Amino acid sequence: MSRHLGRRLLLAALLLALTGVAAACGGAAPDNGAPAPQAPLRPPRSVLFHRGHHVRRAHARGPVRLVVTVIDGDRWRRVPGARVHLWHRKARTDRHGVAEIRVPRRKPVYVTLAARGFGTRTLRVTFAKSRRVTLRLYRRDLQWPLYGATASRTQAQTHIRLRPPFRTVWARNLHGLIEFPAAVDSGVAYIGNARATVRAIKTATGTVLWRHDTPHGKMASSPAVVGRRIVYHSMEGHVFVLDRASGRLRWSYWAGAPIESSPIVRDGVDYFGTWNGRVYALDLRRHRLRWSRYLGAKITSSAALAGRTLFIGDYGGRIWALSARSGATRWVRSVNGRIYGTPAVAAGRVFVPSSDGNSLSAFSTGGRYLWRIYTGSYVYSSPATWGGRVFFGAYNGVFYAASAARGRILWRVYTGGPISGAAVVVDGVAYAGSFAHRIVGVNARSGRVLIRFRHGEYVPVSGNGMELLFHGYTTLYAMRPAPRHRLHRHPRRHRR
Image 1 (cartoon, rainbow, N blue to C red):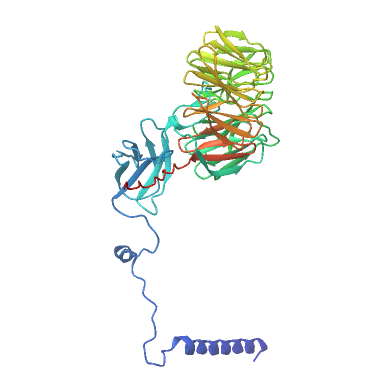
Image 2: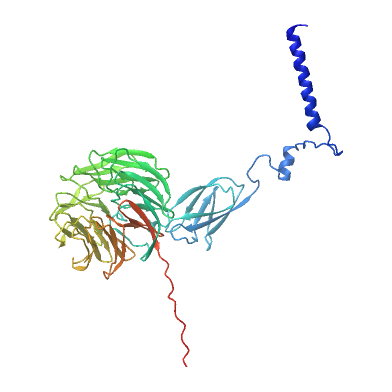
């Protein structure tokens, strides 16, 4: 017998021995006489589905009734009469904000919501855990989509109903100077710091949804919400367009000079000025320039848009009224010093701040001079207008309210430090931030101070129907009205 054959016989013997041991340990019947357990037979696939024991998860077969509840995302109220569209089927919510739609089977679908006074929203809903879902819809008039709250830069949100006293619900450090306020839409605040880091923050919780860093960037303006995009400008002269859901860069344009103007977009066109004295109308949809105009002096002002007319100031101390369509000059007027801040347009008037002119001037929208207020110090502050009044601050630390018609000063409030940022009005309260690191809130009619918040610097406030956002030096604060405690009444004493 050869050596190799011997090795093979030895291996075969060892395998037989191991097989016997395994049979003795696990394959034989137990000593108590009970039959050995048998592996269960696998029934046919049809039987498994018939009995409901699915081998693999599968979507439910047969018609399914899906229940969608629609609520106001800012005020947490149910929305009756909302249109719900999914799986090529439509329904309206009842008076309780509930719509029921019967579909062939349950699967992930896109649900489109719309209602009068609200925006349209499309969401992908899985219906995996339940056939009932609650979805949020947001009122258009409770949003703050751009710097100044409105296209005419009134710096006043007339639909939000939130007043002091407030409580802080969250605070988020942005790790850089906050000079310009957040734009807020559909429960998300979009804000940049001086380093041009733009964040999307959930207003209900303060959670950062995404962050976009601009390499070697600087920023001195607010972003704007434009449909599914976020638009912002940088001090390097770039216009950036981001995906609103992810923060990913979609497109950019270089204007050739620093941009301090905050975006204002109408019909897909972004209007802004630059340090080299040019005004641009940039078509964001077609990625091309509609027109540009050279005004002859540095521009830091943002543009205000009223009807078909664009209003913007320059360092030459001129306020320009331009055609939004072509850039042609409608009229131009001078004030007594350079214009750093942004004009506000309301009720047929244009209110124009002048920094080294130490003044606020008013013109009609047709270009007629109306009045001027002198403060004796810089007026960098962009004015706010509300209720027939105009509000602005100066470097003397005084917060002013004046009659919009005649320019008569109605009240003054000392804030403790120079005021550089814009005034803001929400729910009849006028706000200003100052270099005393405070935000002051004043009754817009009486001039009575309602709140002094211990953090602040530049533009004080933006927000939505649920929260106001107070802007500190580097930290963003979400504020909600504090619960009003009922006064405890002492029981009446019995008369003897």
